[in-house]
Every structure is written in structure tokens, then in C-alpha cells.
Amino acid sequence: MESILELSGITKSYGKIKALQNVSYQVPKGSVFGILGPNGSGKTTMLGIILNVLQSDNGSFTWFGQPSSADTRKRIGSLLETPNFYHYLSAVDNLKITQAISNRGTEADIHKALETVKLTERKHSKFSAYSLGMKQRLAIGAALLGNPEVIVFDEPTNGLDPVGILEIRELIKELASQGKTIIMASHLLDEVEKVCTHVAIMKRGTLLTAGAVDEVLANEDIVEINSANNEGLQQLFTNYSGVTQAKHNGSHLQLFFTYGTANLEAINQHCFNNGIVLNHLQLKKKSLETKFFELTND
Amino acid sequence: MLSLIKIEWLKIKKYPAFWWMLGIVALTYPGVNLLFYNVYQQLTEKKDFTSTIAKQLFGNPFAFPETWHSVAFFSSCFVIVPAILVIMMITNEYQYKTHRQNVIDGWSRNQFITSKILDVAIITIVAAIMYAATATGYGLTIKEDNTAQWSEEIKYIPLFVLQTFAQLTIAFLLGFLIKKAFIALGIFVFYFAIVENIIVGFLRFKKIPAGRFLPLEISDKLIPGPKFFGRFNEEAYKLNLSQINEHIVYTIVLTTGIWALCYYIYKKRDL
Image 1 (cartoon, each protein chain N blue to C red):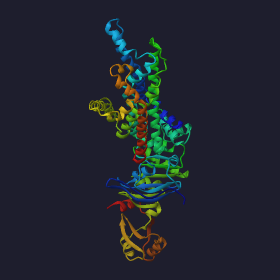
Image 2 (image 1 turned 90 degrees about the vertical axis):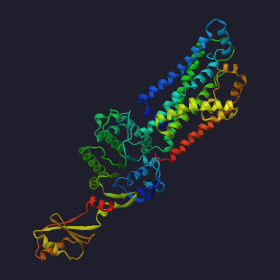
Image 3 (image 1 turned 180 degrees about the vertical axis):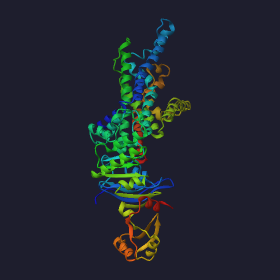
């Protein structure tokens, strides 16, 4: 699959603190790429490097298969850390500057972007008069200006109310359905799981894992079963071939298998042959949250 | 280049503080010269002996062609006012973090510094227009019986432009490195008004010629005191006049060096 962004061995230190250590991965075209990690894991540092506001100590990266340059950045709509605008200018005047620098879009697109982020009514108010959520919306609007092919969002739902969070989630899904590549750093695991197709998990500057969400989560099969006789059920699977672990999760029994080896039909047959009728049988994925804590907990 | 000017224009055209400060800059040059002219008039307008002596001593520094020189000198003492504007324009970018947003949006780091050179150049041009208009105003108003051409000392216009640009460049460097408006401005004013004058005075007292190579003194030497200064110390005045060409070169070298340093630092540092 064609890569939009390719990082190779990116390293960055602040004195003795190693903010990024030899980070390499690829962002496939058309993916929604989530970057997860606890505070201080290096997510924003990495976005700062790929947007050229921070210098890496080592390593390299390419955008669209080319070395990063001002021209490649013009093709990327970005919101990095905080909304950065001229406080004395209105939303429209600020976006005119964004438009003039990036050459993305036209004056009509400025109004369209403001409409998308629901700032039309306040488009002539000064930025300094905006609430935190409105500032965040304007920054998202600036990133969307001129319909860029790649969008980089650093904590896009910061400062937004629940309705705003839902709207941004829907917006990201809509952008993804248009074939845009979206790179998004977030603390919100649920958020990432709902919208991302790919994920990278970082901790203390190290990349722990990266890839398609299904691949990252699916390193084992979890089969959830239930019957009227749960005690008998657990005994039945004590020595069942391929089961690495069996444990109760609420009223259900969870059976763990090596990835790709669970056979639901065989499990059902095994129960039936031993006089137990299942009332619940489901192959479950591990939640991103579970996986995240598994990887990032010391 | 034009697109950079256009973008800088978008940044400042609706910035009230910029226009207030520009208005103050525009009023400063006629204002300070009016102050000096009033002092001159009080000394020379009477018909008594003292006024006659004063008139012979000072000549008329505000008449053509001497007005180009005198007004340039008096105006140059107030470079602090446009320096406030220059420091404000760079430190605002840090305060709002727009210096990094401009790069994220698609400017190269070099383009950002080039846009700031253009800001300093535009403020210099505004200051120079106000200086030239003030000098012309005095020259046209004050009639003096002399045979000199009105344009004889007009070389002080480009010298004023170069001096103002060079000294505003130093103000920019302070804002660029320190990032905080009040601290940068405080250091600039303290150095401009006190530190360098003390050092220059001390070195002159010790007869060490190195004083003329201090950062602001290098370009201060482009516009020596008005002609009547020569009546107090003719030898020193002639020496100052003879050093102007040399100092044009030093000023250009220093100013170019400062901007090269800004490009280098901005290219290397994290934003």
C-alpha cells in the first residue's frame, strides 16, 4: 500500500531526556492513523518533527515519497498542540493568512471551512473573544481549509463539549470516507478505536507497536461462551486443545486461543457432545484500552 | 517577495497597536525637530548681542541644505520609537505562537525571517519618509541667505535609511533572541541610552579608538552632529565626516551579519 508518511529512525533528545528513540513507521494512504501514548510519550514531539517545527537529532522522514519541504507542508492541514492565531484578528482574517501561506483554497473556502466547524455566526469576532472550544474549532477549520489530502490532528477534541466531540468524530469519519489520510494523536482510546484504521502506541519515546488496528489488537482470539451450567463448562474446557487460558468475565467464560486458531463450530459441537447447550458464543477482539494498558503498564 | 509582503500586510492591517505605534513614529520626527527648532529660535530670535553670537555660531541648521543633516541627526536620537514597533512585531509572533504556525502552514523558516526583514524595511521607509518630509518642511519654510544648493546635503537621506535599518536590525535581534517584548525593549533602551554612551565616552577619554566599532556606534557614525558642532571642535568634526564612507561598509557588514545569524539560528532551533 502506498505510504503518505514514512519515518525512519527518528530520535530526539532534550538534554538527558530522550523524547523519541529510533521511531520508524509508515502511514498508509487513506488511513486514519491514531497515535496513542500516555503524557510524555513523545506524540506531540513526533508531530512537531514531521511538521518541521522541531528538529530531530537523527533519522529522516518523507511526505508523499519526497523529503519534507515547505511545499509538502502546504498539502497538509494541521492542528498541532494549541490553536495558534493572531488574537487581534477575526476568524476570517486569520484564515486569510492561513490561505495565503498555504495556497490552499479560496476566499469562498474560508467561509465553507468556518461553516463546517460551526463558526459562521462568530466569523467576524476577534480570536481573543473566543471560548476554548471555539478556538479549537477554528484550528480544525484552518486544517480543513482548501480540502487538503492529509490532515494532522493533535488532540483534536481538546476543549470541546460532548456534542463537539461527537461532531468532530463524525467529521473525521466523513473525511476518512472521502479518502483523506488523517494522522491523529489522542489520549482518548475510545475515540481512536472508533475512528482509526491504524494505530501506533508509544511510551517514553519508544514505539511499542504500529499497524492496522485489527492486527495490533488481534494477537490472540478470545471466545466468550455461556450456558446454564457454567461450572461444568469450565471443567469441560480445562484440557481443551488450543486453549491457553480460561477465565470468568462476569457471567461469561472467556477462552483464550493463539491468534487465528479458535474454531467456534468445534467449540459448539464439543459442548453439545458433552451435554451442555450454549446460550452465548462469540469471538471477541481485545479492546484497544486493554491492549494499551497491557503495553504501557510497567 | 510580494506574497510575503501581502501576508505581512494581512497580519498588520487590522492590528490597532501597530497603527497607534506607527502614528507615534510618524509624529516623533516632526515633534522632536520642532523641539530643537524652538530651542534654536529662543537662542537666536532676539536682536541682542547674545543672539547675534548664537546665530553666528549655529548658522541655521534647519535651512536648506543643512536641514538634511541636522534633522537626520536629531531624528536619529529617537530610533527607540520605531524600535518598539519592530520588537513588538517579532515578539507578538512568539506570544501567539504564530511563528510556528506560519511554518506549519507552509512557509520555510527562511521565508519567516525574510518577512521580518521586510517588516523592518517598511518601518525604516516610514521613518525615512517622515524624516525627509520634516527636513523638506523646515527647508522650505526657513529662508536663509546662502549660495548653497538645496540638495547639497541630500546624501543624508540614504545615510538615515541605512542607519535606521541597521539600528532597527539590532532591536529585532534582541526581540528575536529574548522573545519577551518588555525585556528586549528594556535591554535595547538601556544599551542605546546608557551603556554604549558610557563605553564610548570612556574609550574616548582613554583615547582608545575602538569605541566607534560598538554595535550602535558603528551606524551612529553615519550621521555626525550638525555642522555647528564643527565650531566647537573642528578637528573632531572633520574626522567624523571623513569616516562616514568607512562606516557605511562597517554598517552593511554588521547588518548583513546579524540577518545571516538570524537565518542560521532560526533554521537550527526548535520553534
